Amino acid sequence: MLQPTDGGYTNGYHHDGAVAGGISGGHRVRRGSRGRSRGRRGGGSSDGDARVSQWQQHHEDDEEREKPAPPCTEFDTAYFNSYAQVGIHEEMIKDRVRTDTYRNAIFQHQNFIAGKVVVDVGCGTGILSIFCAQAGARRVYAVDASDIAVQANEIVKANNLCDKVIVLHGRVEDVEIDEEVDVIVSEWMGYMLLYESMLGSVITARDRWLKPGGLILPSHATLYMAPVTHPDRYSESVDFWRNVYGIDMSAIMPLAKQCAFEEPSVETITVENVLTWPQVVKHVDCYAVTTQELESITSRFKFESMMRSPFHGFAFWFDVEFTGPTVFPLNNGMRPSFVEPSNSNMTEGNQRKKRPNPNDALVLSTAPEDPPTHWQQTLVYFYEPLDVEQDQVIEGSLTLSQSKENARFMNIHLEYSSGGRSFVKESVMR
Image (cartoon, rainbow, N blue to C red; front, side, top):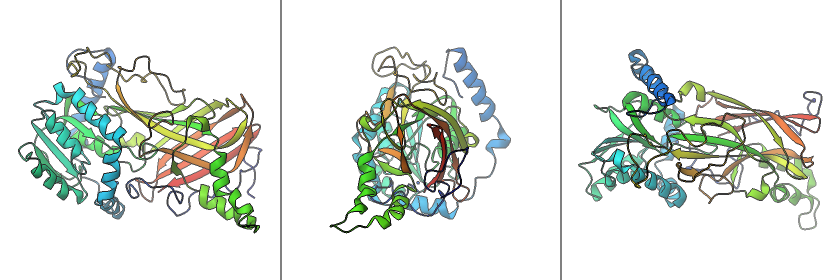
């Protein structure tokens, strides 16, 4: 047993988090290892004007924009190769929540897309590029570094869209587009929102090509966390070994805990598993976010349990919003009422706010209370559960950082305390 932290005791062997291996066995890894601000045009709020200035300052920094592209590492190559498989794209496309929301967002912003130039970052099979062409885009640059780009080009030909959709096989950092673009569309979200670091490619595309006042879909993203109880999962993975066909195999339980709970697990939970209201870990404004701020994110949290229950770990999920520029009316005949995202008043660590009006923005959510998606939820389990009482406080801090070994991996460092005891859990999402 390790020595206590902050006067308490360690919860198992939490300090041994950074160990080789994949996401917990038996739980599907998305896309193989998936190991894939500026303001609005015209008038707007003072905050919108500030975003224009911020974007222009960054966009006009020629020295920054002309930096050579970072080298393509062996990890990048492996990541791109994982997207060359059809099954990964089949899984994503069959996720109706995901695909229908993107299609709805594109056609909801049809008045902004029609006649304009679009870049699709990480186009895959090209389905979002084709949606943009159907919405009237004058030209769509479909960019993907994976060999699936070859298939995307054939799909474009089969749908007689070669005059509108140009497939570029290469990294966003390397390909050349000889004009500015009006719209960026990308499905960049990984497990726990930031796993895979694909948002960096969207930022690169934004800074290289997007016109001031251009549209980014999705425009905003929010990562949430909450304490959870999941006795069935714990019993299935650990207590099973107490009696196996009448044989006492409890000696294997410490190894079973390590194998089951050492690394994050991607699975589906329900609202019944959630012990408290969720809190915001990170809010991302795609018009303003920088790659530097994504390298390491720290957020403090404080929860109060809504019930007496064993506390098995923390769950993470996210939502993204598709918010359009105010000067261009949406294609639903309604006056747009959402210059800012509906949860823009949330700072890291605040509780999730209910949106006052469901028409404020089109939202793709992976929350436990919403229809399931292929992202599911990401859970960080403890090796031993903690018993908490109703209204008992759970507080601490979370740091998410890009792995120095591979920036597409994510280091997770949790410090938490409850009932006078303090713990540390470290893990790597590979």
